[in-house]
Image (cartoon, rainbow, N blue to C red; front, side, top):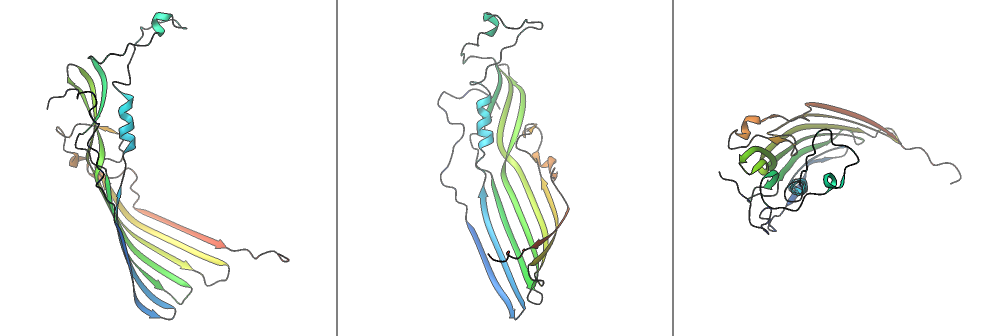
Length: 239
């Protein structure tokens, strides 16, 4: 595809005010025996990322950034000619242009969960949950060297990344001893994506299918365990 500058005043991309992020949740008590209550709960939410970083990065290139190169061995402090700023010039060539896909949409994440809470004798609770997240239309930075004779580097922000997260979470809470709370948790999870950072510059999608990059996330941690003990100290006498 050909690359050229848009007319002055053109928006970076077609913003929209018609997005909505619904959230819904439900709880149902399966059993209500004293000290052995069983509860099932679930929820879903749609969340949007505003993508401010990619939009702000566009200000760090033409026409707001001009590069002036000085010859090796230039003496400091600079003389008036060397220190003079470059004139504002909208003509080519352009060292670096950062642009956004005209059809860019807000990145979105679908989050959902379902869990079971089981009382174990009144003061103990065991919770098992499935938690998932689907990242769609995530921001992807693509870099193209010399797309034409006038542009040195074109960095384009698109919606071509995606991610998937699935986890089994277990939690045990014990309050059998007065003023003490014991809590332990374990998570078995997997996280995959086509890119783990919106700040990484990748080859253009027209040449390399982003699906080829699908694999474990940089921050994928298959196992995670935690434990905590809380103690409520008695109030001093006389207070």
